[in-house]
Length: 357
Ligand SMILES: Nc1ncnc2c1ncn2[C@@H]1O[C@H](COP(=O)(O)OP(=O)(O)OP(=O)(O)O)[C@@H](O)[C@H]1O
Ligand SMILES: [Mg+2]
Image 1 (cartoon, rainbow, N blue to C red):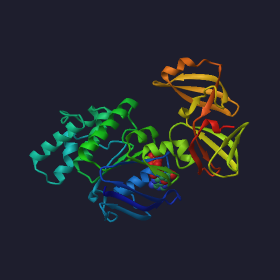
Image 2: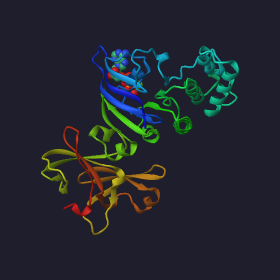
Image 3: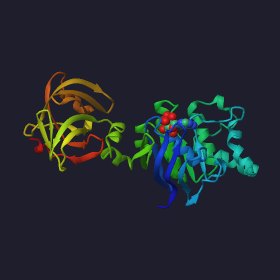
Image 4: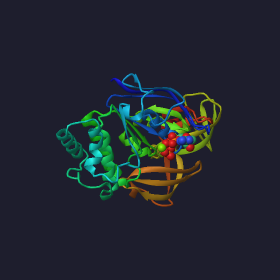
């Protein structure tokens, strides 16, 4: 597919020395790419640079292969939806939406038609006469989205558009945004610090940390094969266990694991809660005491006390009755990632339980 937005070696250094560096990624036509990372990592800085609200220190931003650096925000082929809606309070929904079209001298009848159409798209038909203050947060955010869509941008930029909304509404709007995206084949750059939101909505995730990119990959890959300890800590749940590697073995307490790689030094083993399974009788296992059981909807979280530390394990809702508080069970780690001291991935593999010595 064609590359719609290319960000090449972008940097922005604020006078304080903070900012972003070596930002390099692209968004293909019709793709939704998410910038994900903790507060202050530089997501908004990247997004605003693309939108033209920030002047970068270096690098290039291209939309459909055209450099947009010299263009002011309103002349760029992009539109931005902000976290704080930014609707004009003294204007009705209709006027908020029609504003940009009037500026473009679009005919009255066509404005009427396009506003109606976009309101239907965001499920707010018949709201034309209301003022922003008469709308809920979710409705205002939909209007802000509708207003950006009316600009027919080549690239739609969204900065934490749903973060002010409650969880249920956030879910709904995420789905709606995906629907609208596929209906209109929109190209989007979406910013969030919510890993669940990023995993559920994105074609590709750009994980940022402290002004640089840690990993670029589809959600599935980010989850299954995080490129660093930082990504593993930030995305999904994971148990971290300290160990000592010597050549191709890892010693954790009195447990010895083997890995494909050779390394000597301190390591951290990362194990997802769903990759801890109850071990059958024949396999080599780790003894664990059931310390806590918590129902979390369709699955349950079990806290285990083991000789290698406290571990969280996820089991299906139906399996929960097989567990008893304070009882002792045997577990195995079916998949683990080994991180070096500097946070780089050393080994990432699905493990055969028989390999546990
Ligand atoms: N105008 C500015 N002047 C100086 N420093 C700034 C400015 N804007 C942002 N920064 C700094 O640059 C870094 C990145 O900020 P940015 O707003 O891009 O982060 P963010 O990832 O969007 O965070 P959040 O999730 O909190 O919105 C932060 O350390 C921030 O303090
Ligand atoms: Mg921000």
